[in-house]
Length: 420
Image (tube, rainbow, N blue to C red; front, side, top):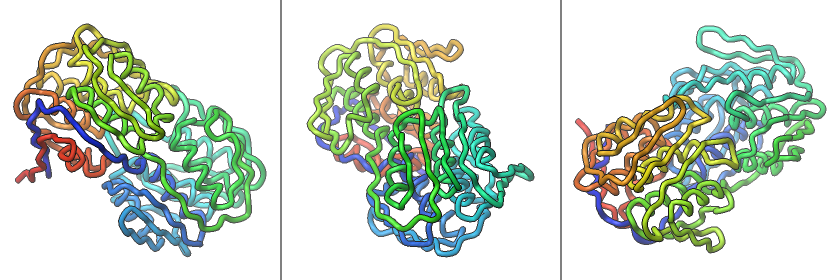
C-alpha cells in the first residue's frame, strides 16, 4: 500500500493538463456492451477504477484493448452476470446493469462497493428498470432484472438528495433499446450524463433533452459501433484550481472546460482568488487576502459534493468563519478529523461544518477515508509547514491520474512511497 510524503510550503507554479472524466468514462465504457460492433473511446484516464471496469467488461465476454489513453471494446457475445469480486470494488460498476438489461433483457449484478461516504442506494435505478417492464429481485447480495420486452414509459427519478446521476445513466442505457418512448423526469443534468448521451447518439440512439431535467429516449432496434472522446474531468480541474489558491501559487489549468465549473469558480472568486478564462484553459492565482464563504452542495449546476472536501482545505487557511453544508451525502465529513490533525479548527453541526479559518497548518501523518477526502488532505499538506504523510492513497488512484507526477511538475515536493 502506497502513501504520499508531502513537504509543504511551496507555491504551485506552471501548467497542468486535465485528464478525461472518471465519472463520464465508466458509464461510457459500460455502454459499449450495447452493441456487438467495435467501439473506440479516447482520452481515457489511467485510473484503477477504469482498470476495474475493463476487467468487468472482459469477464462479461468483451474484447478490450488499451493503448495509451485509447480503449477499444468489442462485445460480440456477452453474458448477463457480473462477478462479485469485481463489482464490489467500485460503485460505478452498477452502470453495467442498464446495458445488460437493454441488450440481453436480463442482468444479474452484485451490489456495488466504492467510497464510504454514506448511503447511496440504487433504488432509483431499480425503479427505472421496473418502469421499463423488468422484474427485479434481490437475493444473496445480487440484483437480478429480467423481462421479455422492454417498453418505454414515463418515470420520475428524483430522490431525497435530488436527481441520481448513475441512475439516470443506467436507465437511459436500458431505454435506448426499449420499444417506444421513455420520458425520464427529474433526470440528472451533469455534464457526465450529457457526455454519455452524446456517445449513445453516436451509436445510433435517439435521445433529446439531455442537460435538462427531462430526457426523452425513443428506442431503436439496435446500436452500432462508434468513436468518442471523453470530456475533461471537472473535479480534477477544480482540485488543481483549489490547490493553486491554497499554496498561493499560479497555475494554468489546460483543457478544463470552465463552462462545467461555474459554481466552483464563483466560490473561488468569492474567496478572493483570481480566475482568468482563456478558451478551455484557466489561470488560477490568489488575488490577495482570502475571504470566508458559505457553501452548500447541490446537484449540478450547484456546488459539487465532489469538490466539498477540497474547498474545506482551502477554507481552513481563510481568516474568518466559513460554513459548508452537505446536502448530497450524509457522511461526507470524514476528512474533518484528519484536517484537525494538521491544525484546522472545524466543528460539525448536523449537515454543516463550521470552519474557523486562518490558523497555520503543520504537517502530520493523516489517513485518507475516500477519494475526495484524499485530495483535500493532499491540498492541506501542500499548504502546511513541514511534512505530511497521506496514507491509503489507493483512494486517490481511483480518481486522479498520476496526481503526484502532475504536482511535481508544478513544483510540489511530493514523493510516493511504498508501505511495508
